Image 1 (tube, rainbow, N blue to C red):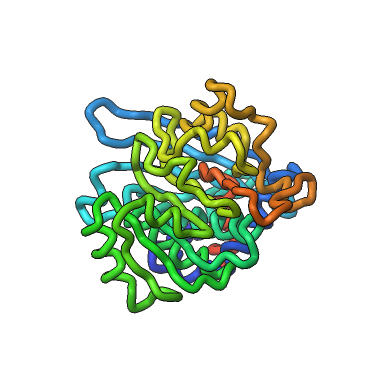
Image 2 (image 1 turned 90 degrees about the horizontal axis):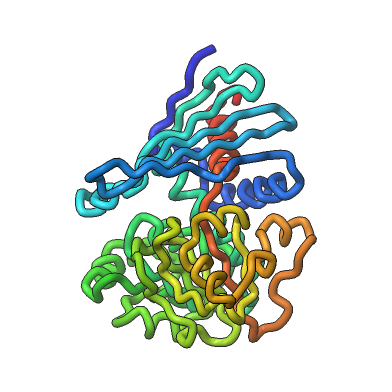
Length: 320
């Protein structure tokens, strides 16, 4: 059987964002129901390297057994080279024989599916009348979230905050012509967050860049960056009085530095945080009032990569 190899352009074409949101909803429901399984991802940090190797694996039992494995190289210097920090391959293999069916560009798959899951969380948790979106960050994921989040709410404006005001202005100049609604650069992270109904943090910060007192009642926050135990980009105090969800509690406990800090300080517990899959299948309630602050803490899951790869390969005419 031939091996299908798909580059980033092919992945982008075969995985439209709106379709990916639907695929991610099904993947997280399948995870909740036990149709797909995965271990916690594994990190390796080589000496002298500003980055890490990440291994993520998942298995689908039905309707057709499939293995999905992502080998990811996360390199902190890549943005200065004009490259996504996330590089590597997603491998799709037969779930019974292990024979490889497809290799897909991991940067493209990760970028699309991560933003799609945030959009799903926003659809499930944000207020229906949310109109102002703030994106904190100016990299690949900022672009992808600018594409995904407006698919689930009719925003009238987007505010961008970066490491510096100049970076924010450059981002707006680069994407303004194709943005789904008016977009502007904010002077500071604080001013963007205080004005927003929905906030997305997609930075590589190792220390908090967003604080609890900046969030207005009724805000929804997607915290997407800082996915290692020693890093946190949001104030751990946020967990004290939010309706919080994650993609997987095991990942939250093992990898989210902000949650680990909050739990150690007695601010929250693991049981207090729901999983999106529980919300999708009706096992847990989400927002119950307009003034609640809701949080989705994204870590990224192998089952998401597997589902995205299966969808892409099917669209390419592969047997999957």
